[in-house]
Each structure stands twice: as C-alpha cells, then as structure tokens.
Image 1: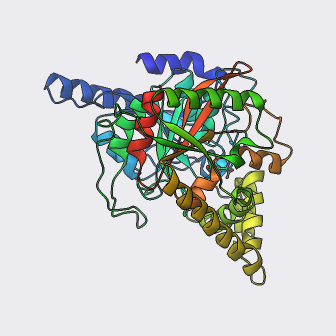
Image 2 (image 1 turned 90 degrees about the vertical axis):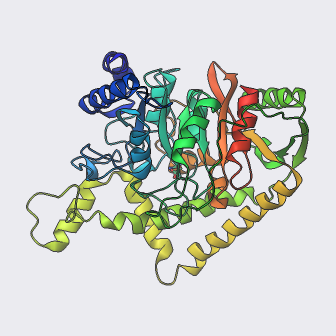
Image 3 (image 1 turned 30 degrees about the vertical axis):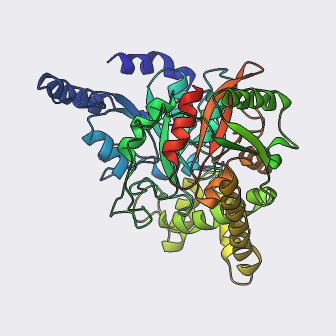
Length: 446
Ligand code: GLN
C-alpha cells in the first residue's frame, strides 16, 4: 500500500509506469501475508516489483509502449513473471519503455517519455528507462528489464542504479515480446548488486518454452558476493577511453578502477580492435530481426486495427501505419531493405561477419583478463529532445554497450560517482556465464 501510494503521488513527475496493477498487487500482498503467517515466507514473499511492459502479464495490458498493443491484454505470463509470482513477489505494475524497446531515451514511448529522477528535464535512458527511473525515485526496490543493445545497462547508468544483462540464453525469453531475437536478453535492475543477485537467482535457468535458453546449472548468485578480488585481472579497452568519451565520465571510471586496485586487482590495457564495427553491425542485424519479428502485427491477430478497412491490403497498411511510431517504422524499413534479395550479402551477411570479429575480440581479451571495465555511456543523462532529431546521434549512445550483445556476453552497469551532478555508470564485462563473478566484483566495489 505504501508503494502504491508513493506511485500515485509521485509518478506524475517521472511517468515511469504505463500501468499500475493495484488490484493484483493487493491480492498478491494478501497471499504473501498468509504465507508469512503460516511460516512459509521466502525472500521474495511480499516483495514489491515492477516489470518492463515488454513482459506478458496474464490479464494485464502488455503494451510494449506501442499504440499497436495499447489494447492488448496478455493471455499468459512470461516465464520470468511466472517465476517471480511463484516466489511470492508482488507486481506493482508495468514500466515505461521505448516503443518495442527501440531507443536509448524512452522518448519513443506511445505514453510519453519517462523522466530522470535526478533531473526531470533529462532522459532516464532506454529502453528500460521506466524501470530505472522507478527504482531511482524509490517507487519500487527492483524491476525487470531487457537489453538488446544496452537497454538495461544504459538506463541503469543514467539513473544511478545497478543493472545486469546476463549471458544470452541464461534467462528465458518466453513471453517477452521479441525485438531482435538473437540479441534480446532479460535481466535484473536494482539498487545494488546484492539485490540484483537475489533477482537473478529467481530469473536464471532453463525453460523448455525458449529454444535458445541454455540448460546449464544455476549457481547461487548470492553465495559468492563477498569473495576476495585479490589477483583479479582487469582489462581496460583502449577503444573505450577514446574519442567521444566525456572527460568527467573518464575521471569517475578511473577513480573506480583505483578502488579495485586497492582491493587487490591488477589492471592492464587491452584492445578490442573491431569496436568501431559494433554500431554499424548492430544497426543492420537488430533492424533485420525486428522487421521479421514485427511482421506478426498485422491488424488481424491482435493489437491495433484501423477503422473501416476497404480490403485486406488496406487493413495491413493502415493498421501498421497508424499503430507503429516513427522509430519502429524506420527499423522495419532498414531491416526489410537489408534482408531483401540483392542486398542480403552486402548488408546482413557482412554484418554477421563483423559480428563474428567482434565476438573473437572479446574471446581473445578474456583469455588475458578476468573482466573488462570501462564506461557504460559516453556522457551522463542528456536533455529530453536533445538527440531525438538525429537517429544516428541516438544510436551512438550505445557505443560501449551493444558489442556485448553481438557477442552474447554478460555485462553490468554499477554507479561510480557523479559528473555534472548526474550519475555515472561503470561497465563490467565478463566471460560467458560469469554472472556470479560480475556480481561479486560489483558487490565488493559497492
Ligand atoms: N538503444 C538500442 C536500440 O535502440 C538498444 C535498445 C535495447 O537494448 N533494447 O536498439
């Protein structure tokens, strides 16, 4: 009740929720009360959470922040929603995001932008900006997010919270509305690594409903949080401390690295030579996959349908034309072009080759060091409207985050100080399935 009251009185300033599920929350809270009374409470029993509005929630609108799904009531729960429900968590609502998770600022939401609690003239980042803003504003202790090219880590950095993108395949994608299926991964967003570890304990694991979900044991992520960092080898990629990096961000990140040295870690420079290929490769692959995934929104099966179509083609055209926003249409056009006969080899195939080179850079670097560190974003939170006129400028927000999705590796963002009074994120990248190590490293720092 106190969380719901806080959302009611304060969220007008942040617009971090698309839907508040008051009835469901109170019902789940009552169940949690009786479990507690019966001595059957676990860690998550009665714990309030919010889910990004990309995860299907049975009986509750799941909009993906699109007009296309404004009227869509999900008929089932996403696997991770079900897992949190079974663990006894209380769902407060569904958080704001960029439309279909396409964006880095939350400005492409059909429901209007979410705002950064540190300065409400600024963006909270995206696409999981609503989850980050709600946590930063203390409306909810933790929330779920998804990360296709940085959408957990970048908003975590801009809002001064902790976010983890797990290894591709660690968390089920069942019931998570697909953007770019070979890159999408769900993960926890919370105040601290300790809280993120508790969440990942619930989220991670095999799911027969997702064919890309990996059948591998799930460690207890909380158990190794306090392990010593003595001898930890940290690599700093030369390419991440160049060009467009704001010197105030670089300074905070360097300060953080010194803290790790005090904890017994050794630091060396490394190179990820194909870093410059990441943005162009991603912005072919992600739109290509999006263009096929979004073909299901045809005005027939579910979602928005235009008024009085004259024939089937008119129904398709106007439903999609009226239902999708500008950024989504841009991606569908770019992706369809890149996949079309005659262009496939020049664009899609080429991008996949670049992807392999990027992955090999990381695999090579991670034989020399245990973790890679750098900034999460090139600048702190920018003003609403500042980058929305130029899509390419917006895409550059992701220069340090999206290579990891192309490689399938896990990464975290943890708060590491302020630049111009705004939060700075330290990014920590690890090897496949090294989430426990990342959480340990982040926790010792926090
Ligand atoms: N900003 C990137 C994009 O617009 C990443 C988004 C995401 O991770 N969902 O595609």
